[in-house]
Amino acid sequence: MSNPDLALQNRLLASLPTAEFERLCLHLEPVSLPLGQELYKAGEPIEYVYFPLNALVALASSVNHSPTEFGLIGNEGLVGLPALLGGETTIHRAIVQVADGAMKINAQVLKAEFERGEILQKQILLYLQLFLTQTVQNTACQANHLAKPRLARWLLAIQDWLQQDSLLLTHRYMATLLGTRRATITEAAGHLQQQGMIRYKRGEITILDRPALEQAACSCYELLRREQARIQNISQTISLNVNRQSP
Image (cartoon, rainbow, N blue to C red; front, side, top):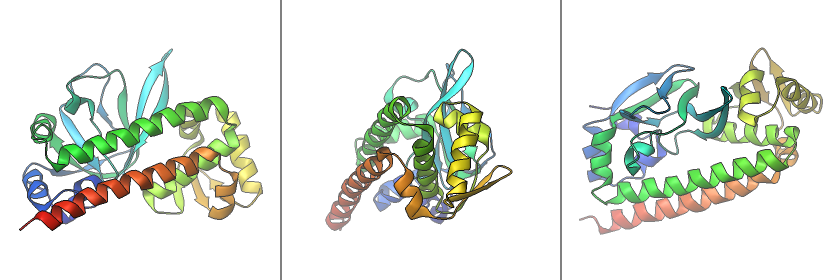
């Protein structure tokens, strides 16, 4: 059985009405997610779904044996959506990129709860919409924007997820995230550091001037931030309406 207070650090779980949340808590297990752990692999059945707390999990596919990330999942959502949608397996992998904890649940148990058609289903479908929007925008961003504004955008997004100024990010990981060469990331990070927006040393980036970084970021950051806020407002409205109707 999970610790309910710990589970509430995941915003999707926190959006559920009391009865559904307590029912899920009977099956949720707190787990530690070390850096680099694969939560599921391409082509293999997804046995467990994870609700990140302060971890970040990347979804990555491989082209010519080179991993390419197309999405990040934090405490706004869950890892293992294909298990709930009927496909059972997928062609991508889920890899922990920022270590922390998560709540783990058997995929079949969660699928049964999802298929009850209650608030959990509505909140997961809302999250799915947000994730698909982010994935599409990430693809457009990679095709149309230069490395420096894209790097600024990702640093802001990761800071939003983790709510801290110091981010443990290597050049290698940032190159994978942005789909570019490490030398390109070195140059882009160097420009941001010279302009006083960040400080970079030995795999750690510290954001020093967030307003300036927002100015340097590409338009995708603000576009996605507005869309996330819009969907979160819908999610909160659903939760409030359910609470008002509860006896």
